[in-house]
Length: 234
Image (cartoon, rainbow, N blue to C red; front, top):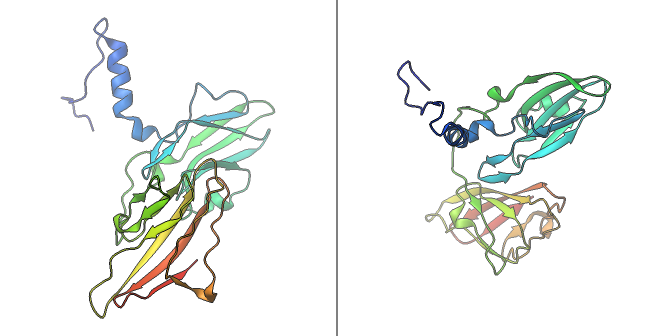
């Protein structure tokens, strides 16, 4: 926010203006996440800016839009992956996706667009919201191990290698249980697998199948009991 007396550095001609502008743009970069990138937007190509979403790195990217239609551009609420569709299924799913832009195209160019990012709780500015529990990104160490004790109630595992060993959260107090939702997110390469479930008892006796598609998310629920029993369900 900037009042009539501003705390934001002002651009002054012949006083390092370019450096000041670049510094301000850097400071404001979180609000530019998923914004239209004018440099890479041309014809039916829609460019967007990346950044960091829920601690996940998002690269600058482009989408190819259809001609003479309306496209709905969204970002996956879990992974931040940006897609476009002429249908409104994902656009209307405001739980699973963030609305970004509604774009109208002619035969060869974009003719108009609407920016809907301000209404998206995870991109652009501010969306509030509350919720119970905590979550954190969990990374894979050089030995293929992940430590879920540092991930809160909903650890988000960024898959950039195969997982071969899992450290589970500490046991709760006697007579109690704790629930966790673990999200396994494939990176842009995909193909990573998860083993090392140890003594977890899964429904049907079968360990979960982790989707290996680049950018995909697989959710695995765990219930940890004070006596050491761990139940799992994918």
